[in-house]
Every structure is written in C-alpha cells, then in structure tokens.
Length: 113
Ligand code: 5GP
Ligand code: ZN
Image (cartoon, rainbow, N blue to C red; front, side, top):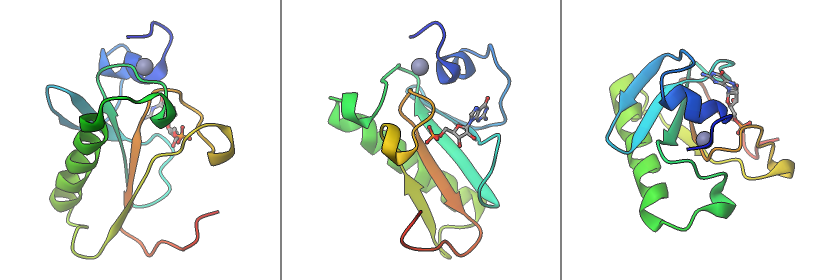
C-alpha cells in the first residue's frame, strides 16, 4: 500500500467511491469523470504503479476477468465494450496505481485518441 495513492485510499475506504464489485484481490468502482455510459475502473488492492511495473501475470488476468464479469452484469457484454490500461505519460496515465478501464454503452471510435 502507498499512503498517498488515490486508488489505495479508495481501496481502504478513506475516499468514497461508487463501488461496483469487490473480490479478495480487486476493487471496481465508477469513474468520477465517465467517458461512456458505463465507465468502471478496476484496480488490484495491492499497490502496483503501472503495467510497466507489474510482474505478476495473474494480476492483469484478474483485472480483465473481473471487468468482463461487470460488463455482463451491466448488460453491455453482448453489444461490446472496451478495456484499456493507460501506461505512463504518453498514454495519459494520471493515477499511478495500475487500473483497467471498462468502457461501454455507446459506440466507441477506433483508433483511440
Ligand atoms: P488514467 O488517466 O490514469 O488512465 O485514469 C485515471 C482515472 O481515474 C480517470 O479516468 C479519472 O477520471 C479517474 N479518477 C480520478 N480521481 C478519481 C476519484 O477520486 N474517484 C474516482 N472514482 N475516479 C477518479
Ligand atoms: Zn496505490
């Protein structure tokens, strides 16, 4: 855990968030600035700064499969959705606690900006 990390603080319940799902290893909550009708952020409870810093292959599996489960629960799985992990500055990562965005509920353009 990192004391000042925003997502660690959400995981610890120190900052309120609209929690969508919790597992022993992950927490999913609604993005505060949603970019689509469904915009959920899935994070590990453990602090890992970015995908570049990740070493446990199961970590990304857990994030992705929890997002897939939430997509089904949200009713967007059949229509389609996108999962994104922004990594470091040029990709626009702003919170340095690894997180997977789940976006859906509207047609999503490609390529992304
Ligand atoms: P990044 O830009 O690092 O890929 O994504 C960080 C995301 O966290 C952004 O989409 C941003 O809107 C979201 N975010 C930032 N601060 C908060 C917060 O306090 N609560 C919630 N729920 N989301 C946040
Ligand atoms: Zn953290």
